[in-house]
Amino acid sequence: MAIESAVSTGLPVWVGYSCRTSNDGDVFLLNRGQDDAFDEALDQLGGLGGSLIAVMHTEIENTIPALSVVKEQWSGSMGAFPHSGNFVMLNWQFKDIMSPEDYLTETQKWAGMGVQVIGGCCGTTPEHIRVLKEGLPTHVPQV
Image (cartoon, rainbow, N blue to C red; front, side, top):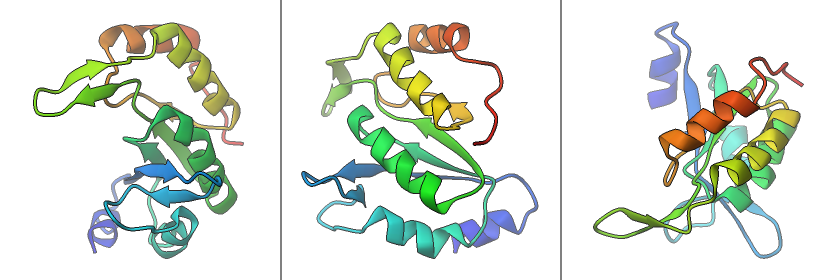
């Protein structure tokens, strides 16, 4: 398996998961046509090792529920780099992009949960990263 091979190198390995939340609040992996529960995936794959588990390529409103699942099942470092907007297919034109200031407000919540690595995915711009650099602490202790 890829995670086992990566861990066997002795180098730090970050494992990222894309997630979605159901209408009733359950967190699932973002798989087309499948309903794989995120907590079950962490049970299966989390024991393989890694230095950090991240919630990535995920809608912003699904990030805290997914991070909560990680926090319940993982004692190591956490990361988050979700979308800050949506894109129109084929041309990757982004729309509905969250402002850098609003994105910072969300990321501060993640830092409060003990998330130590914070970035962005689809829709994130250099301005978003500048605002994060200026507005987030330089060190977040593992909670």
